[in-house]
Length: 478
Ligand SMILES: *Cc1c(COP(=O)(O)O)cnc(C)c1O
Image (cartoon, rainbow, N blue to C red; front, side):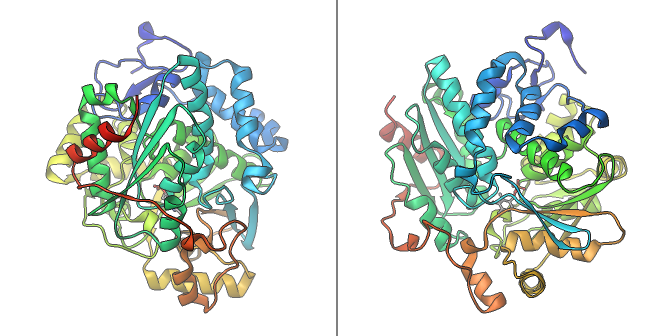
């Protein structure tokens, strides 16, 4: 499928829906969000790292591993020295409160927890977003451009993106959030960011309504170009690429010897986090099982159990960042499973978009066999119980998203193979659920003590694409 005659750089990107394999560089992909054909950008090949080389990474710092991995995806489109500087500036103890950036704790024999939630918004999205903020700023300066980031989120993406972009001169951020589903704390995190380049919009509807509006705006090519619309939601390749890093760091800092198997369990929504794990495995990281943990919104669990990818009505749960009715990043995995046949991928995705359901049972069977994917779900009760158990046994207070993963880990533990669960948010963001579970709430992190009582700003705009376009026309100065 690789058409070398089009090669621009040593690392090129194609769209999952483009049969003519139009080639893009990392820098182009970084600023453009969705491809023009509605597909997602994906590298033409995954770089491979053998075990001998991997062994040498065992002593590297987080920023050094980040450089080693991300450099391969950036290719020649950014000078190595500049990239190294950006990464050293991104993954610091000051930002992430721990020099390990994503430290690993042992919960039980063979169950580990990798803390991905030490960044400024207290969720794992900071790990990618802080990198994006810095690399996008670098690119915009280099190309003398400005950017309007348009995104949708049911929670953590908003504050992570806004924290990462708040001081950046060339960037405006317009974020759509559903009126219901976010915790008071999450709302306050976003709403209290009052910088003049940050626009929080409150939309009647669910996360999917928000995401559909973003997709719709992006289909207007002329508008998109005029207002330099870009994306930082989990479809942005720059984010996926930064997320691959912590799988390498997590693996290297959990196993004793490189080559030993490790299962990873990921609380999943839009499938960005797990996709990064799958790519890490494709790159040669000896992950054994890729285990998807969902909440009551079981689209992915049903897909991986039955092969039917079916859009469902969203249920608002106690793990709101996993409340989705479809998993946008699944398209990238689908593309790989179709042996990178963009025509077929485009056909299936369009069928899914119109019928809200496709049957992929043969493909999923192959996928499960070849890559050892599996899935399971949790209910509110399961998560409440898990938070309680972990608190009783370890004194650690986990959040409801992390609980979704640990619930699945404990339930599916079957051998001596270690399991690494991803801690995706801090419990302090979800005090109501924590109170219900253990009868007390965690101590607020520094800087978050009275966040709900601080001044907040949200704009109310009608929930359709043309209203959002009008808002951008009125508010974004070019
Ligand atoms: C975004 C998010 C998830 C879901 O991650 P995906 O990459 O969308 O699958 C899980 N937990 C938390 C806390 C999140 O913020």
